Length: 148
Image (cartoon, rainbow, N blue to C red):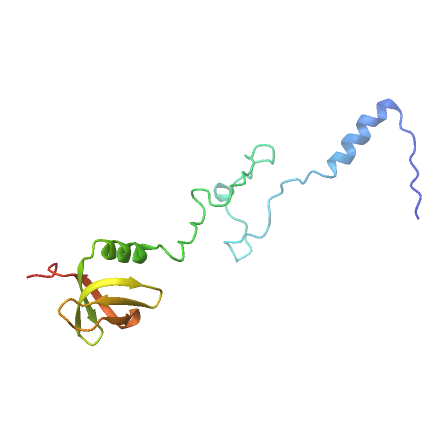
């Protein structure tokens, strides 16, 4: 292991040594020969050069918390439950519905229940009740709503 020898410093010399050691840490701001926007090697004219403020003159950077305004917006939720809310409302009020399938067939009835993949429709005019897969549904509306 290396042994570091420290020599005692008189009181008057300590300020000089301290300022000397601190001078090593300060970077002088020198004009650069290379210019990022000018590739021909010539330095830009004096009016185009901007002086960079010293470190103590620049404002400190403030860290923003995640999700703060002005930053990246959070992703929308995967499921909004709007579909579930709509089905619940139509089931509770026993609203007569018209379900139009992808092949153009219309099914009239009341939604009895639903799950993630299908809905069960009770038909009123004596036709058998049906379970319809949701991917087979083109659209649906309340009966009497699409009257022209």
